[in-house]
Image 1: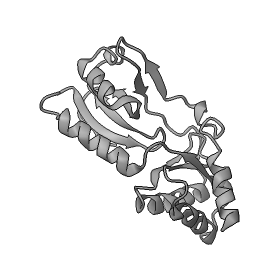
Image 2: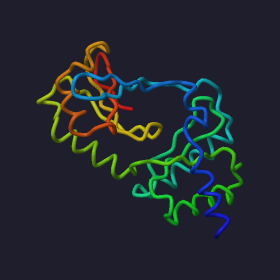
Image 3: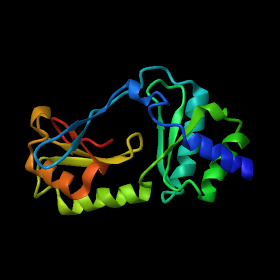
Length: 195
């Protein structure tokens, strides 16, 4: 068990920048008078994902979904060569169980990169639900939807506003003040869509 804890600790030391996630920037910050607003831009994989990576990511995703208080989620890297698992509770037994599952299913350990997550999926869902309740679509028609980003460990709020007007939007500013940097804002156009 000691070697498993060492493996998890070593894996958690791996950062998103070290993982190559910075190669496809998708989050920028805008600083209006009241503070920082994180702007989300949809990114897509830049390379083919081998079936072995995809299979391992699916197994990990199914496992982590069963433990939303421990993990924030999984996400395949932009280069398609590995996937990340956000770990909010690194001391939880489920973290070692995930490593055991990957090994038992014959997945290459290099495919999975554990990264520290400041919030679990359950916490992100709670924040997403709170935004939905307080800033209901009827009262704020420019708010088009919300989702959880496993890649960035935050809640994405889709706003029907031009990108250049995003930071100045009063609803964006109010949500950013209330929920802080856990929220990322995406300028969208057209009809409501879900991810």
